[in-house]
Image 1 (cartoon, rainbow, N blue to C red):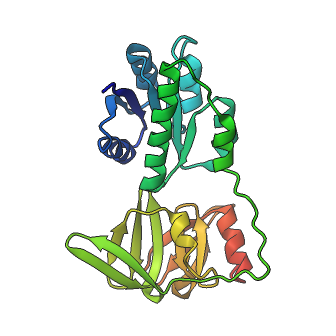
Image 2: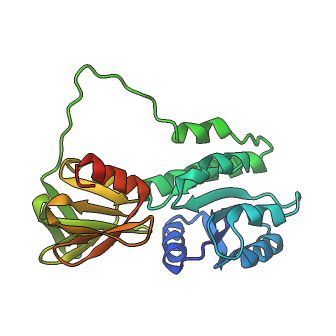
Length: 262
């Protein structure tokens, strides 16, 4: 079996380890190198000339687009961008990215990328290469479905898998939910739970009259808000009843304002 030669590039250790762990579950992928910054990435890609690169966009020394600009035309692996910022999607298309993974992503989404990557590389090696940007665009363009009477259904309990069983958490007991790369931390008044799920997917199941997303990585229960304080001239923080403090983004402030809090 011919291996798909792969390089991982991300400045965050947890992210590198997460991608490496997921790739190890598919025997058709061989990880040649794992890079922590753009400079290492350029050197590694030019040295190995891999089939595919999982490339972070925001890195301190050189971003993902700058890495690609440093590569000669003769080196052209399939690029799967990985980032926590969806505003780079269009630029990724322009850079002829094969795919675009938005952190934190579900395992199923990642394995779908692997499946399509294998198909694409097979086409390249057979001389039938056709990089379909339209397919990529479709992933970020959800069709608008018209329904006569939309009904919202919210969950009352969150199920968290753990070794040896599962834990059920009453939603009313959730104080805040924090996202960190590929994981969520669910904070209650009693304890904390870790689960592998995206913040977007869990937000869809929560009552938006009760839970507010104040930052791309934070959802809070408005019943646990103690105060909102000015942090800088343009920034605010929210202080919860458990004394946790969270930065409020511009969009988060609007969400709070819509709940008559600001």
